Figure (cartoon, rainbow, N blue to C red):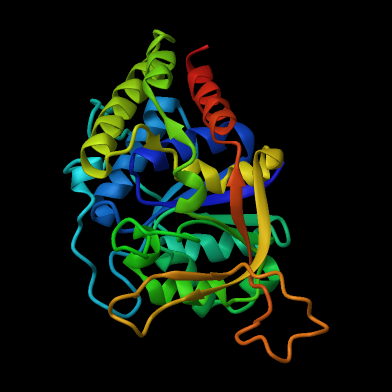
Length: 318
């Protein structure tokens, strides 16, 4: 079983990822970052989710702004509500985050679990990038990093940039160029994994507190997905970063070089994925043929993936 820390900014789909991971991997910690709302609120949301589901997992609060630029305005209230996770009355947190900063927590856990730990970055990648900068030996200690972010096609916050990467492109550049094994699950696959009305009904049918809360959360998220993006279903973004470690047959990965665009104001935060299958023995006329730095998700069994995750979450009330 994969040992994992989830770095997140809950978030409806972050909440799904937390409950999914807690049942399918060895989840040893949750770290929080700014993004869908302030880091203070994302931390509170993570603690509320843990209380709802009975997760005895340490939560460490992390970075409140990007590495270099000022924090972007929080624009996800249209999707996630004013508190970042609207739609259900979640319980009040019954504990505080641990005293350690998220960056310190990541470094210490990587040192303790050398060669075993995967970091799942499903928000802005600021905590992970800062940890890599402060402790270069992380590239030896970590087993890898999996990212929900980017896209091989269109973006969401801009025409070509996905929100998590856009929040801190410099941090994303640090992560994708650190030399560790990287998995990237971007919008091109996560938007093929849609939560619909039948999934809301399945969650509510449990009759328990987790199913009711998540049914209400998913109903809010589904409604906003239809209103904001004209989507027929709510994209199950963040669990897609966990699925390759649990049910790898549901997703197809391809080696690729991923460049994070920093210079162009119009393209800032774009993940330029080189998916060309170039014969390395004959590349003299091929430009930009850089070595792969990630395994990029290019296909997903969307319906099966969503059903799989929903059944895990519904199981909390069994």
